[in-house]
Length: 495
Image 1: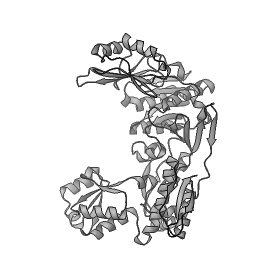
Image 2 (image 1 turned 30 degrees about the horizontal axis):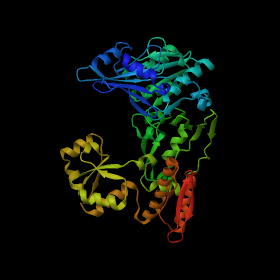
Image 3 (image 1 turned 90 degrees about the horizontal axis):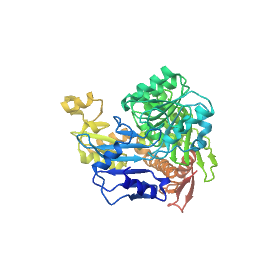
Image 4 (image 1 turned 30 degrees about the vertical axis):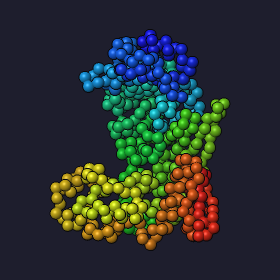
C-alpha cells in the first residue's frame, strides 16, 4: 500500500479482522471489516496510488486477479474500456487452522464431496484445510487444481497452508477442465481438490475424475442441494434430471402423471456439505438416495453440525426418512407431475394469439405459479390456438425449432385457459380444495425448516387436518391444531 494508507491500516486497533481494502480512482480509500467500512484517508485515490500497488503485486491473469508471493492475499482489478486499472479490491487471505474439525470424519472417509455456500462463508478455507489434513496427516497424494491461486497463494511455491499437497496452476479459467483431466492422467493423485466448478465442461471433467476412483473435493456455485438441481449446467454433479414417460400401468401404480422427473445417472459426489454459517453445516450423505427421494416429494433431511464457542462440535442426526405415503403423493401432484424444485419454479408462458387477460385471470383464480412473458425465448411453454398451430407461422416454427414446448387450446374462452392450467399443474376440480390444503402444509414445512418460525394454516375440516398432520410429520415438522370449528386450523413448527 502507499505510505499514507499503510500508516492508517497499521494503526487500526482491529486490523487483525480486516477483510479487504478497496481503492477506486477518484474516491477515498476504504477498509472493510466485519462490522462495517471505514475511510482510510480524506484524499481520493490517485492513478499513482493504483500504479504503486500494481507494481508490487504479482502479474494479473486473464481473470484480472493477482496475488502476493507466498501469501493468500488476492488483488482483483477493475479496468476501464482501454484496459487501464481504475480500481483494486485487495482481499486479506488467511490460513485458518482447525476449521476442518467439524467435518474431519467425512473428509477422512474417502468419499467425494462438494461444498456449497454463499461467497465469504469459508468454502475455500475449508478446501485448503482438507488438502493439508489429507496430505500431512493421512499421507495421501493430494493435488490442488488452483485456478486463481486462491487455495495455495500466488507465486510458484505453494503456501504452507496446503501442507505437502501439490499444486497445479491454471493459465486461464476456461482451461480449468483440461487441467483437471491432466492432473489425473499425469500425476496419479489419490485426492483432487478444486475450487469453483462452474461450467458444464468442468462438471464433465469432475465426473471423469470420480469415475476413475479418485476422491474429489470441490466447491460449486449455489447455497443448497436445491440450487444444484435447478442449475442445468451443474445438475450433473448430483446425477442430472430428465423427464421420463411412464406406461399407463406404471403411472397408475405410482399415482402420478405419465411424465415424471427422475435422476438420469449416478451422482459425481457422494456427499454434499452446505456451509450455512461459519460454524453451522448441513451434511447430505448418500446423495443418490437423497436426490431420488427429493424428486418423489420428500424434502432433504440433512445431518446438522454445529461448532460451539469452545470448539466442540455437536452433530444432530436427522429423523429417519419417511416412506412415500398417499398424502405425500397427493400433495406432490397438487402442483404438477415433477418434483419440489419444479413446483417452486414459476411456469413462464408465452401466449400466441391467445387472450392474455383471460389467461391471467385463470392464473389468479387457480392460484398457480405461472406468469406471462413477452418473448418466446423467455418461455417454458408457448400457448396458442389450434388454428395457429396448423398454420405454423414463422414465429411459432422458430420457437419449436429452438426446443420450446408448445401447447394448444381449441378456443379463446376463459374455460379453455383454465383447462390448460389444470392439466399443466395436475389440478383436478373435484379435489382442488384437498390438494390446496396439502400444498399449503408442504409450503409451511419448507418455510419453518428455513426460518425456524411457526406458520399458521387456513382453517380446514377434521379429515383434511388429519392429512395435513400426517404430511407435516413425514416432511420433518411438527404440528398442533388450534381454535374451535369451523375455524380450527394447524400451526406448523420445526421438527
